[in-house]
Amino acid sequence: MPGARRNATGLHLIGDLYGCLCDHRLMHDAEYLEQFCKARVAAAGLTAVGSLFHGFGEGGGVTGVVVLAESHLSIHTWPESGYVTLDVYVCNYTENNRPKAQKLFDELQAAFNPSEPRLHRVDRA
Image (cartoon, rainbow, N blue to C red; front, side, top):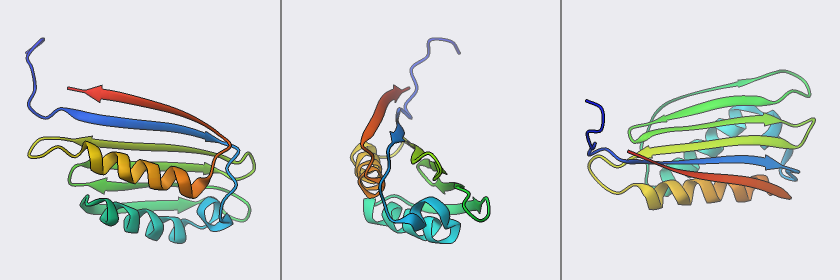
């Protein structure tokens, strides 16, 4: 119904991370990045229910997603450009997951150490 207020409000954190100077495994190694992301998800208090990460071969980047009970984390790396896109979205159906999403986003951003982060915060309802 248009205009109806939803109970499951959410927070969508989006980062375009330029000039990343980080552990090369974060940019190139799909298995390493997947385990790293899943550990950060758990540390933030969110619940991973599945994941899929794909590496693009020698010198290539990684694309991956961790599906969360609360929504998702997606990440894409371009090591040749030092560029990463980072996307964390959580719903707040049974509890306020915003602080957990922010913690996850902040820790991942810090790990990539971008010299020029462009960050966006979208409140969703």
